[in-house]
Image (cartoon, rainbow, N blue to C red; front, side, top):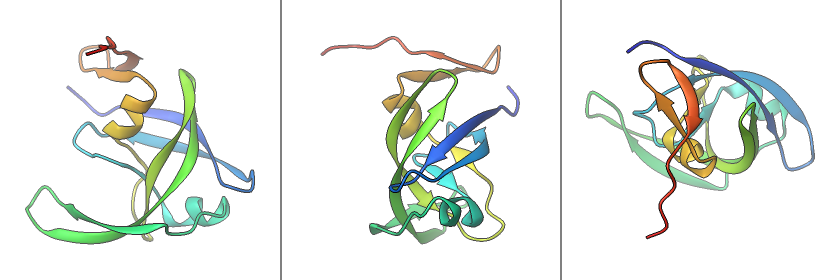
Length: 117
């Protein structure tokens, strides 16, 4: 096990883009974009969601959607609009939408076995 980062591109509703280095976080449901990134691509809150942190505390954060592009593919996905100081995270919902899984041994993203059931 270790820390894995991937480089990607995020695109807002009006086509503005930003490069982002994302920490692959298999414990996070949603992808998180840091404050300057989501503002630069023109995202706005669509709803508020309550999240539970690892220590059990709960916080509310605004959520929007954007296009996330990685080497392995691209898709629209929900994203948490981070606060100043938050780190960019690649969450499991985005990974599943892209059909990807983190191989913990090689620390690389790879296609997941897709089930139709």
